[in-house]
Each structure stands twice: as structure tokens, then as C-alpha cells.
Length: 361
Image (cartoon, rainbow, N blue to C red; front, side, top):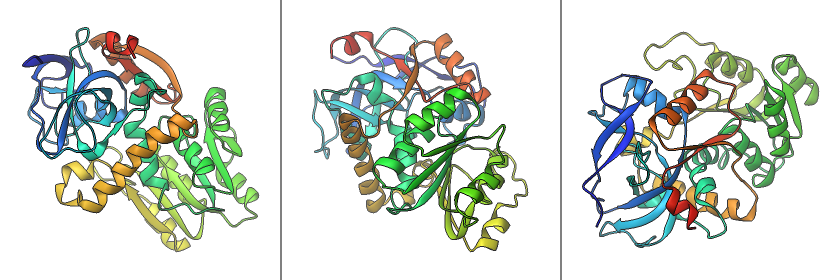
């Protein structure tokens, strides 16, 4: 029988920020459209430390974090048909619920919506499956309906968690003609290149806008996908879009990167001068504004989760895991501090939550 509670890693006070602490939370009952997963592995995302700092989903602490999960389905809601008890799955846990990091060995549980849960292929390990959901869906939502075969695309930060998946997706599934990326360290540049970028610029040394103008004969790129959460980057990348092109940004967008204050941003003016389309991709909106989570959105995101598993199994879009840590308060805090510092994490940091499940796969 499953326990009534487990000890997660999260925040016990509103807007407490880092460091996270051990928090006792109930093992949730899945709703009609949810599955309960015994968590084997997870990964780290900037969202987690931002939730701890700002609690912008207005949760009542204690809140356990860790929303990328892989593991085994132990219970399903009455309307669930895509997966069954005993299935090995990957999922993005419900952001309005508790995540699956554990402060103690094993024993973590999380609920996920059925459409955000996909069967894990046997050849894909729990660790790598758990490195995909949030970053893959972010890249998928940013590119899948906005990049056409033959496009020239610029993806800054091609060595980051979202960026390296987006580069692979653009080059290998969207069939972009040219993928341009950038990085600030030799390792980031190398990962972006290994992920399929045709050209990788060093943003510390190169005049990126001038180089892109040179590479495109002054025309600019068809699409920019900026997942850097940086106002400085937003201003620079907006200048690289061609007339009538698309500028796609992940998160809350220009002028709002701090979330607590809104500052003037020239991005809209830059895009308007080019007649370029502004596209905002924000997975949080589906949970903070439930009305946006309509049938079309569920189908789209569910399709994304299925493709994440399929493409990883085929080796088309695969996560680069640069570091693997055990699930625990100290280890997770160290990893999140590295993410928050910026520039020091290559690809993804994976978390082994239940060593027995991982060892037994």
C-alpha cells in the first residue's frame, strides 16, 4: 500500500526562496484525469527556484517541488485511458500540485494530468526520460507551429536545458535550412554544435547581430526562439529578425523578467519596425489561467509528450545530462544555485529519486 505522506524537497514559507528544505506533504489522490506516479527520477528547472522565491501560483505552503518526473504508475483516475497501473512513464507533474523530489531515499509520489503523461520506451532510461518533459515541451511549443522547412532560425543559448533540445528539434524535425546558435563558454558552444547548429557564435566575443546580418546577406532570420530569460538577450535577438519574421520568447517576455516589476523594454518597437510577429510561449499560463487549457491545448501538449518519448528513443532529440545528483535537500539546493547563477550548467541536471526503481529498469 502507498503511504499517506512523503518527505519532499520544497518551501515551507511563502516566498522563502533558496535554500529549499524538507517538507512533509500528503501523497495525493489522483483526480479523474490524473495519474499517480511513484517517482524514479526527476530533473532541475529554473521554474523551481522561481516558485520558491515568488510563489506566483499562490500555493499554500508547504509545497514540494520537482515537476519533471519519470516512474511507475501506481493509481489512475476514473477517466484515464492512455496509461495503466504498472506502466513506466514520463510526465510533467501538475504545477498546481506537489512535485516528486524526495528528501529521503525513495518514496516520492506526484500526480500528473493524463495528457502530460506518456509511456516511457523500454530503451529509454528513467534518468533521461525525466530530463525531458518541461524543457522539451517548452521547445516544442516554441518551434513546432512556427518553424517551416527551409527557414533560417536563431536560437541563443544552444547549450542550455531548453536550448540544446530546441537546436536538435529545429535541425532534425522542423527541417530548418540553417540553425544559428550562440554560447558563452567553449562547452556550451560545443553542445550547441553537437546538437545540430550549423553556426555557433560566441556572444562574449562576437557581435551577434552583425554576424547574423552577414550570414543572411542583411536579411535577418525567419525565426528567433529566445529562451534565455534575459532582457539584454531579448533586445539583441529582436534585432536579428527579418521583416515579417517571427520572434518567439519563452516565459513572461520582455520587460517582465523579474516578475515582480515591469520595466520599459524596446523589444515591441524593434519588432514593430520590422513588421515581425511576437509569439509568447508560457507553459505556466495553462495552470495559472485554467481557461486557456482547452481541448486543443491538451491535444497539442499530449502530442508533444508522445513525441518526446518517440524522438528520444530514435535518438533524434535527446537530452544532454551533464550532472546527475541524488535526491536530497543539499544536493538539490546546490544544483538550483548553479542554475540560478547562470551559464554554469550544460544541458540538464538529473535527479535520482528512487535508486531501486532506476537500478531495476
